Length: 571
Ligand code: ADP
Ligand code: MG
Image 1 (cartoon, rainbow, N blue to C red):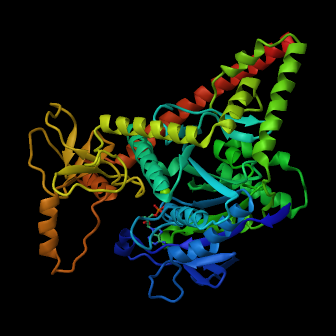
Image 2: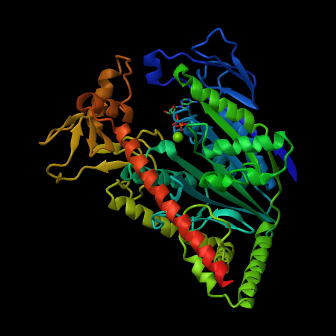
């Protein structure tokens, strides 16, 4: 067992165009490992200093010798974590920070050269290293899953069949896990890239249709990396690369968990029962990664701008506390075979217990109960048998299953009018060369411009549609770059590839860069011309959804409590 502290890094991003236009001031300074923040309202006050494993200055550009590139961040953090994965440890990397601070950029990045984040670089490295392997007795397999947690509900981003929320359960041996979350078998990096891309598309479609705001969603991408020696399995490592801790206010559960863990280690109080893991699905699922069996790294993303002072300071304080969290990582040796054996023992134990009490009918009764919140152990032997069956599946079976889910996913996207690549696939970043089309715009850059729609004839008369912020009732001819809002939350930009080419040629000589035509641009325009604030409407609808969800959850908790009482009576 290796007791190790959580590796903590902070990173500050460049100003965005809006901050530039506003003439924002940078309140962050960095030197080696230390980061200091200046209160813009009290410039005479002494700056507050913090020290981390890494302080990444990404506020400038490549030419600056102190600039931290995507590559640098990967080499420091990603490479070390990958090494631990090969050693057989559980590994987790998570990003923390306010919306727009740079979490997605650091974890996922962009497709352009040199802009890829930690996850894609790590996946590429993983396959490169397994391909280099010359040991004939050693083989590897990789599976991935991708889920989103929104308003405490878990959604499978890779399997279109799994509509609605998945159950979060706790298994006495496996710990907290998501029931029925699909694991896709992958054989190279481009398989993973395709899955991430479709996952992001699915996330975007769902978020747009449900009118959700991405600042409250957490995306967790998991890579299951298995190493086998001979044909008897000797070691399996689970590498969890998690993205998406989107924390706005200090009093969220992740923040509370970090504080509680830091307190525990600070005061030598070894009582983990006070850690509020169960307060949210995210922290419950990350339980082992936050202070358990895992090598964990946290990257706190910082905005540089003075108006974010309070939030930056709060992020720095949480990052500072996270340094004190200790994890006890163990190498996962031979767990697959051991797990199957332990699980089988568990099934027999449960069966005998129930049979001896004449209560075998209870097995199914509890299995039917649906509830999305992380509940106390409520596992029956059917569940355990399902897990065993999954563990015993052959690689060929896994590949077949993965492919059939992929086909369903692509069929579903095609049915929704999301364009299918000329060669028949739906995935990959591509843009039609000639055909005019719509691209989606989203508040979250990661979800923006990932869906392409070809326009079909037959608009609905009377449908609420805005072009460049103006309500339209009759046909209009669209031009390259026009903004289109349908209803309130479906926001698009019109692309006319030929017109775009002409425009580029014309402006190439002028060297000018205007404000990007993105979601915020379309939203500002609609607000100016119509007084409609999309964001505010989203917030309002979201609050309604949340209060409805809370009510449902209370009811579900009550039902569960009643069930428990009834069961006590029968026993
Ligand atoms: P978050 O995921 O925390 O909400 P994003 O990663 O989406 O934030 O970042 C917001 C915007 O800032 C994006 O357009 C992103 O490309 C840009 N950005 C963030 N960090 C950097 C960086 N280090 N260098 C360049 N651009 C960045
Ligand atoms: Mg993000």
